[in-house]
Image (cartoon, rainbow, N blue to C red; front, side, top):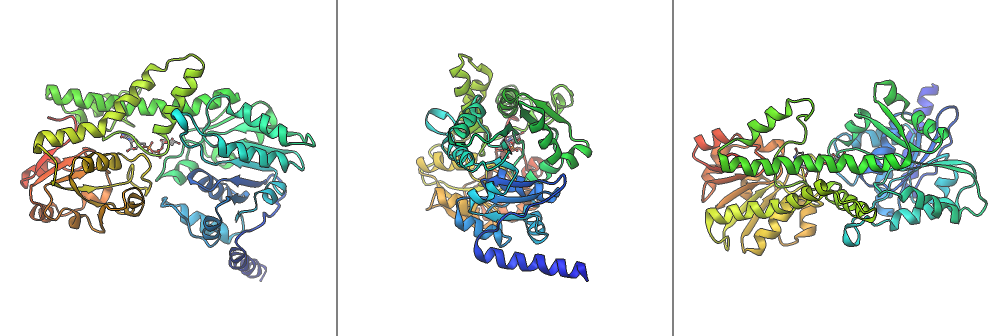
Length: 465
Ligand code: UDX
C-alpha cells in the first residue's frame, strides 16, 4: 500500500512539475547530498542524471527555458546512448529535477557543480564569460557553507580566478569549498564512461572538498574506479594533458598513414602491431579525416594559448594541431588527383557527425570536407542516421537523405566520413548499381575494402596505397 502511494506521488510529481516548467530541489539527509548542476549541456546533463542514478538528489539548472521544459517532461535535446533512460528513470523516482531558477537551487543545495560551456574565444583562448557569470551567481547565493566543483574544461589558473569572482560577490563572507573535477566523458558513450571510469580526478586544496567528492563518487570507487586526489593546478593540467595526448596520438597515426602510402605499407597493420605494445596501447590509433568534436580542437588550442602565457612552447601539441588542420584538404586534393576538377561532380557523403553514435557536428571533419568540396563546385548529397538536421543548421542548402542508398543515386564518388556501424550492413551491390562512377573514398578505413574491390568498386582509403 505504502509502495503504491509513493509510486503515485512520484508520478504526480512528474506530471505536475514539468507543467510548471521547473522543479525545486528536495533536501535529502544522511550521507546523501542535495546537488545543483549548473549548465545542462552534454557534461551537465550526463553528470546530473548519473549522480541521481547513484542515489543523490540533483537539480539541473539552465537559463534555456525551452530546454528545461523539455527535460522536465523526460525528453532530451541530444542523442546520447542510455541517457534518455536514466533521465526518465530518475525523474520518475524523484531524484532528478530540472529548473531555470538557479538562485533557489543554489540556496537549497550543499553541493554545486559548474558545467557551463567554455567555448573557443578570440585567438583560440577559452571563453570564460559564462563560467564567470555562474561564479558571480554562486557568490551572491552563499547562504551557508557549500562545496562547489568546477567540471567545465578551463585553462590553468581559472579555478583561482573563479575563487576571486565568488569572493567579490560573497558579501557575508560565508565559507565555502572549491574544487576542480575534470570530466573525461566521450560523446556517444558518456553514460557508460561515467559509470565505469578509467579514473576519477579531484583537484582540491583541503580534505573536506576531496572527501565530499569521493563521497559522491563512492559507488564508482567501490566498484574499482581509481580516485586521483590532486592539487587544483594538477587537476587543471591533467584535463588538458589527457586530451592533448590523445590528439597527438591521432595526428601521429595520420602522419604514419601518409608515410605508409608512400612506401607501400598498410597503416592498419602498423597500428595494430604497434598498439599491441602495452606502453603504446591500441586506442586512438585509427587514421581518419582528422579529430573533431567539441573538445579536442578547442582544448588543444586553449592548451597552446595557456602555455604561451607561461613562456612554454608545446611543440608536440602544436604539431598535432597543424597535422590535424591539413587532413580534410589532403582528402579533397586526393579526389582532385583522381577526378581533375571537382566542379559539377556529384559526390555522396555518408556520415556528418564528428564521430559515430552522436548527432554532434561541432568541428566535424565531414563538414570541413563539405565546405572545401562546395568551394570547388562539387554537388553534394549527404546522409547521416541522426545528424542531418544539425548539419543543415550549418549548411542550410545541403541535400540530405533519410537512407544511405538515396544519397548515392547517380553519384560520381562516395565519401565515407563517419564510421556509423550501419554502413557495414549496407547492400553494396545495390550501391554499385546506383552509382555513376563506382568510386568509394573510405576516410576511416572502415569498410571491407577487399569485398568492395571484388564486386567492382575502385576504393581509396588511408595509408594503404
Ligand atoms: C574526447 C575525449 O575522449 C574525452 O575524454 C573528453 O572528455 C572529451 O573529448 P569526444 O570528443 O567525445 O571525447 O570524442 P573521442 O571519442 O575522443 O573522439 C574525438 C575525435 O577523434 C573524433 O573526431 C574521432 O573520430 C577522432 N578519432 C578518435 C580518430 O580520428 N581516431 C581515433 O583513433 C580516435
